[in-house]
Image 1 (cartoon, rainbow, N blue to C red):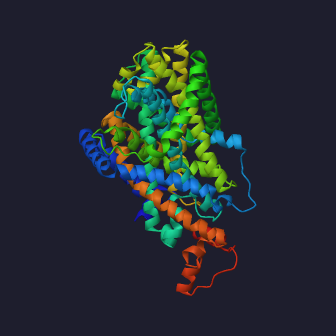
Image 2: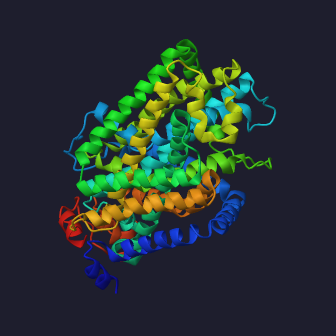
Image 3: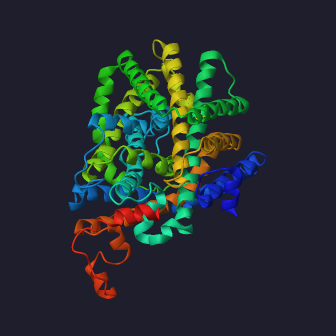
Length: 543
């Protein structure tokens, strides 16, 4: 039936993945827009249940995966290459690091660079810390780096590593379901694998839609500051439509090279904005604070990574840490696939070190420049940023920039950066989702990519109408849970295959029970004496 529908519509997809994900997305929009209050209440209740009963699971899972990657990097498997043993990286280290930054955190840093440190500074989550004190400032910066440092990039690094490893070294299709081939065997190419890919598509859809929603709130605040545009739901839906429309036109025209150049331009503009804030303010204070923040983060990380707010009735962790982990997890298929595409030829050790450390260092610099400068502005009474952030976090960066010279210029620059970040994110996500919903031997059709760009915009509009920032947080916290489970199984699959690879066996030998002596003895299978070369062509034919 689905095959017939695909032929009727003239599509090139995996029908079970494309139509299932599309139907769920369309159903959500169809229900959420007319029944916005009911949808908001349902997801609020689900999120509350998840926070009460499974918040510890999010915390434990992400921290355990960080430990897993660190162990992997220093283990004997760290020298295994993402490709053949003779392959070498496609990009220089500097180019690779730049592309890593472009992968997915630009929008996040723009929104939370001022809002989060100021929020924790004014309302510390730890008992005994006086709001507005030196201790509150130190804790605020530590928490901001905790949320956007090693843990965030662990969530991106694991699927990126697994996709690159199974694609480049074992010639499996570049889809999330391929990562479970060692566990599922041929079922990874059937309904079980399709279910995994559907979860990945929905996670990407809702994760990018959440970013579009946050970006729209911030963009609306910026336009209100610059030209007096009212901050209303109608304006926000219009902005989403414009951004989604630009992204749809981009994917329709196939402007891949243009989008890459636009991304590079946006990084330069972001660095220009950060440089202006640094040198127009107190550069010495920021640099001193940067060093202290790094030390405080490393000191607090061992216990902070497993802190679950056990003895408190506060919902702080639900609104902050759990939301961040779920949001990042929902982005993991999209960013992971992007990172995998640019990482062919690197060793596992190089990959983990680069993906964890380079973006974390950039995050430290960004939050130090904006967060420490904002806290100083609050202390000096230049602006009541705490009250403004409490009322509307999306206005934070513009209220902060107003305390500096060239406020109109820097605010306009921020608006441009936000627009480009969200447009390129929506464009890239459409291409990634299209990759996840079709076979490698099928062409990428324009109408399919345009459909996914439109779906992101519609979901973002539905979420904003259903309750704004709170609705975005609730929906993504609830929907991030299934993919969190997939991340854990992904780690198991990767570890099993690496063990077999190190012993000289292919992924097919692992699936057939011929990669470990104990399995061989139980099954009577004949173990090959060297890595099977035929599995690559067999796997390509199977895909």
